View 1: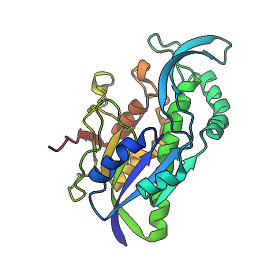
View 2: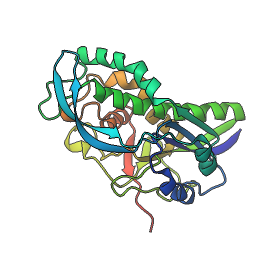
View 3: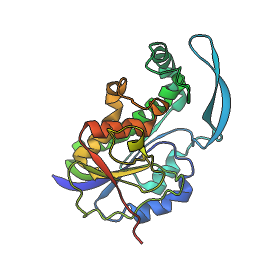
Length: 266
């Protein structure tokens, strides 16, 4: 069985033309690295807007959402040429959202979302967005698993990234030979959220833009999608409930996996 490493890129491609050079320079630093991509058919460039949302109880609520500022579709061929992935999935966002919207409204009426939270009132759209993130992330993991099974590959380390940078983000320079202890995932050192101050069970600051770890630990990371229901009554900090990074950091702690910052190499 061949031993290799993997980079799984998931989410909107947004401004990937600006980041793909650093992707190859800093992540593909060895000949034994395979790339897998799961993305949406839209580029997904966003802008924050305030809009009225009709809740299932008939009330309307003004909330701040990130709406698509660019509805152009991504080029399958261009992504394939620029990244040379072993496997690439481009999913239809409109069909996916249509498929889960009514289910998400059931979630709202069942009080899994706390619509009475004083600081950040929620609606079914909140959980839809989080669910969508974890769905696509898991599809990326499945691409890698299927390829591994078909080609008799044993992936040792796995990196999870997105195609865009936010708040001083970057792709860290990866040394694929560096050992990472079991039960430890390394994350990027930007846009860190101080979850220990919000939930005492979480012992590390966290962000979900970049992560690297051993196969088994990253399997837990990507399997958040299949375990979201286990968090329904676990949130202790209401304003962040169902926030993607809160979900992930809480899930990792529940599985005895800690995170440490991977500092930028000079």
